[in-house]
Amino acid sequence: MKDQYSVLGAAPKKEDLKKLSKSDVHLTISNLSAGYGKMEILHDFDLFVSKAQSLCLIGPNGAGKSTILHSIYGFTNIFSGKIEIDGNEITNLTPAEKLKKVGIAYILQDNSVFPDMTVEENLLMGGYIKDKEEESYQEAEKILQKYERLRNRRTQPAKVLSGGERRLLEISRALVMKPSVLLVDEPSIGLEPKYIEMVFEILRDLQENEKKTIILVEQNAKKGLEFADIGYVLVSGQTAIAGSGKDLLNNPDVGRLFLGG
Image (cartoon, rainbow, N blue to C red; front, top):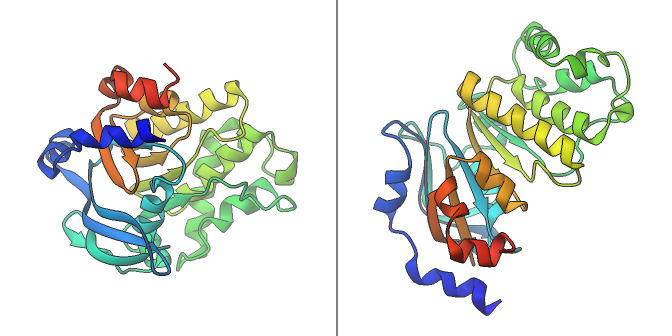
């Protein structure tokens, strides 16, 4: 564990983090301290990510990676600092408000499909807070037309899906609300290698062709950094190292501690 903490020596400054994002920063976290109950997990944390950019959070267990996603979405206690979308503060909005009003969707790492509901019914659940029910049907239909794997099973219960297809359904269900930001927690967890490739191809398509901003936590650090434009290495609730995904893949400290090399 001592080695993991030693990388804190060259912690990046806020200006360094800003340089990694493009000029049109979409989501900003400034001086955020947050946690659960009275326990503070994140300490004076900063993050900058632009529209249609991807950012991967890696680090040891307990470093605060998922806490960042939880804080953005509204699942933590915020002790200080703020979160903004396009310069508008959203720190204290509820998760439902963040989904409906500012377009932030959270894709859980746990298996969250409803097994006895059909694939189509699962998709429609993604739009449960829409004011107009027909909009959910329209978006679900677009998704089914896009993803043949789901379209072929639209009337079947979700429990018949493979692990990769379930993850596709979880991602697709979040798209029904047409979010601009996707928070993705451990997209590869529990999946066979062929499905891991499929899931990252889907995420890449959403970023490049649908201009989604993606912030993900990924235990498979190599896979996450290969995918992401930006990588942050978290240690003990703070960013220890930050850089482009490519640069972090080639960083000897990151390789020694997190990539098995």
